Image 1 (cartoon, rainbow, N blue to C red):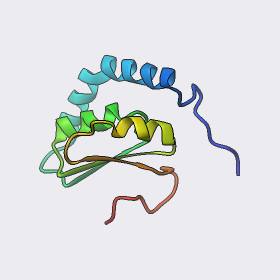
Image 2: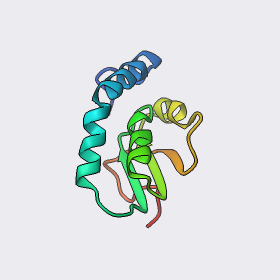
Image 3: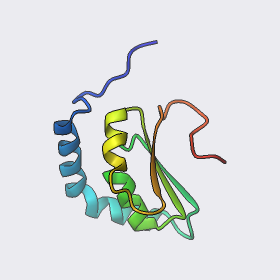
Image 4: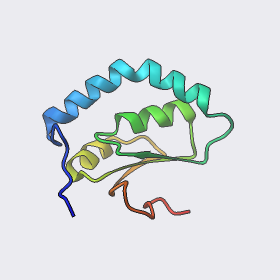
Length: 104
């Protein structure tokens, strides 16, 4: 099987780049989520969460009971989990593999 790696790496610099990009795209992302998801959300899973910015945006916008960010990068998941809000967690997991580490 081919080795999986990030195009721009999973360093602190790469995490900063992803955070900046997420800030720029936040208004569009919030609008998209608000228009496309209706009703209460029990579980939201962010596949390929990187440093967790998109996971937090999903949690803030949709207000699910539980939000889980998954990423294969231990470094990104470690940074994402720092000061995670209540109801938001992060797991090291390859999004190409099932089952997800979220339970049913």
